[in-house]
Length: 98
Image (cartoon, rainbow, N blue to C red; front, side):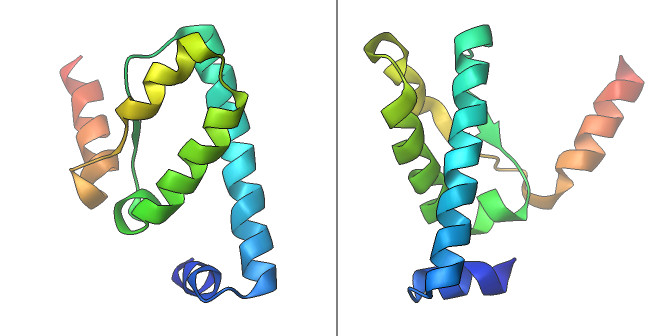
C-alpha cells in the first residue's frame, strides 16, 4: 500500500488512476451512508487513514461533489482515528464489555 501511495504522490499514472478510482468509490459509499444515516462524524481507521491524510482530503473532495448543500456539514467532521493501530483490539474489547 505504501508503494502505491508513494507512486501516487510522485505522479505515476497507474498509481494515480488507482488512488483516484479508490477515492471515488469510497466517496460513493460514504455518500450512501450520509444519505441513509446522517452521521455526525465519520472516523477512518487503519494505516491508510493514519499515514495518508492527503488521501482523506481527496476522498472529501470527491464526496463534496456528491453531497447536497444540506449535507456538506459532514465534510468538516471526517477525521482519521487517533488510536492508530489499536482499532481492532479496542473494538473487540468493547464487544466483550457489552
